Length: 59
Image (cartoon, rainbow, N blue to C red; front, side):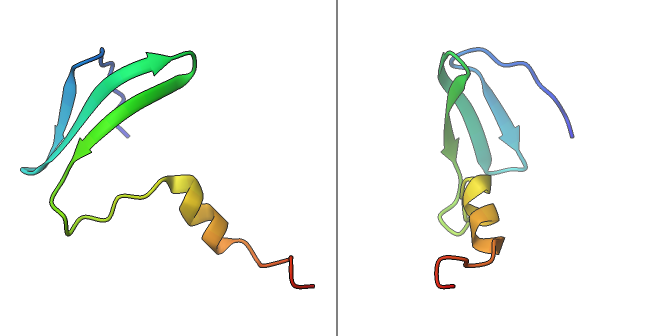
């Protein structure tokens, strides 16, 4: 996994059509903007982990 240092306003380009821009930082949180084609699904990783957990509420 590449690890890059970026400052507010700086960007990272992935492939030909994905751009990630650092918008700001507050404490431990980092705000990013993502420009990508509409056919690229963008979802926070923790949401995909919740989908994989067994449903224990119905027991």
